[in-house]
Length: 314
Image (cartoon, rainbow, N blue to C red; front, side):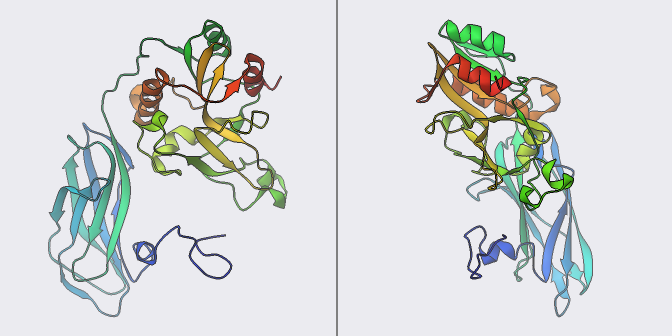
């Protein structure tokens, strides 16, 4: 459990330098109301520094940067000079920056030159308006009946927001410790340990992500449903897989694809149908899946009955 193995060696999750960003004698802090923004908004954050070093930091001029994935500065600025007293949380100032022209995964970086104090936060900026119209040749369905009819006609189908008795409840937050401990508080909670995906998969080409969950996934995965794929062929791997508690080790997925009869199916258990004008993450995911659906060519194959069983457990 944790960042180190049984021999106190690193698992490669974080470098010592990255760990000291948030666990050190001097830690920059940022107060912001959300991690996901749209390009028409103005990013706002209050910045502070917690300092418990051996002596005050006199004449500190902290700097902030909004950087892209490569580390290139997009916006930057300095805070007013301040003395950071020992045993204090000192306000450095406010950041207010229009996000027009910024898109995708972004980082806020705050540092105090001349010291090791540095911290950073992941942000995501999505378009204010984004087409979610299906491309030519793609049928969008939110019921299995509609998807099945289109698949039997040899169409490409994006099935999302579907209800099904066999879909399992899930959440963004991972399981606490282990379901094997028993008791209602353990057995009643979702059993997942995050997600696994390939950020380079073309289905995610317009949805910036790492191979694991970060806070942009909250909107999609909190109080969500997940496909149970235990009975599918071994070589059918979900595009977005849910990592189950190893005591159970189910094969779970949020997104999978398969050739079904003469058709092609891309299925997502996320809610991608409701309040898209207020849910930029869901809108972005739907846009990315639609752009892929028109050119998907799944290697795996399922029958209509097998897909029906994934949804209804029959």
